[in-house]
Length: 381
View 1 (cartoon, rainbow, N blue to C red):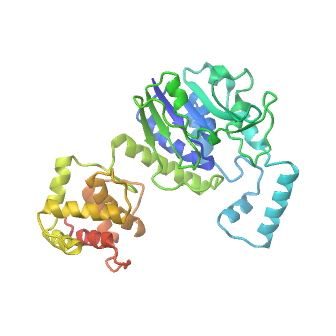
View 2: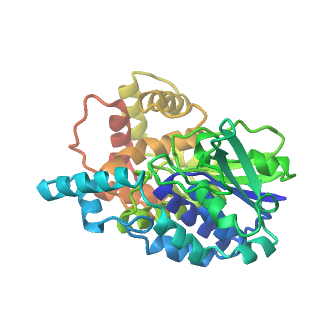
């Protein structure tokens, strides 16, 4: 069975939606969904078959999506556009929150009441699991599937999965709960316990604990954001829509095994990539040999380049040589403003980079830039 896991992360849950759009466009189907916090909320809508409703919710999100805050003030705070009126608002809001023992979740509950259809969710062929923590039973973590949740209370339990300490948290079933992210923010294991043998987990980069996978024989594929998704409560429309687009393209990277860490490039075959490198302008190899203070064959010089760039840019050592080679160009392509959300061929990528490249860009003797400069200067498609 194929399962889906959605990691918690507040507003970062917008990334889930972009990845899911890519997966569903390719015909992916899941027999079970598990999620924590915002992952539980998103997962409930996926499990009940309402992805379109979920997408529309996020695409139209505003800073007041879940809480009764002044949107203009929230935006000014997030953008650090502060003056006396903003400080006054912060003080008044903090006082109101303290007097009511936490941020009200009334608006979030109203939203869940509108979006989640308990009957539809229970009747769906897609199973659903959420993670929460019961405070009064020695902080007992709970991994609850549909069948484990009392009738009429599924929306309440979904909300408990997102119970951050700052919230005014209502009792459910006479008990107090805490956000499931303090136990398992990326709940792969509940699906494994229930017989799922292929799992896709969409992560948000949230700094919360996750339990180790209990069975390494299960195929678990992780889709991570290629850049930070921002703050937990940053529901600004532009930021949310950017994260959705990022999720969509990072989903395509996963589906099509695209090259790149920051960009999206169709991966040539190993043979074609070797031919691409071998056919680079000879002057490129001369400059690389000088910068690297080495001699030898093209293969030796290229291997030395990969080693140097990996160390200087602090890249993961498990990246392939072609990914390191592209990463060398990517860091500067991003700095010079190359369009991110586009799928390039390798030739097209270098051609486009060449158009915007700043040959006078100065760094503190950065070998990676000098090596990149050598290929861009001499590149011929």
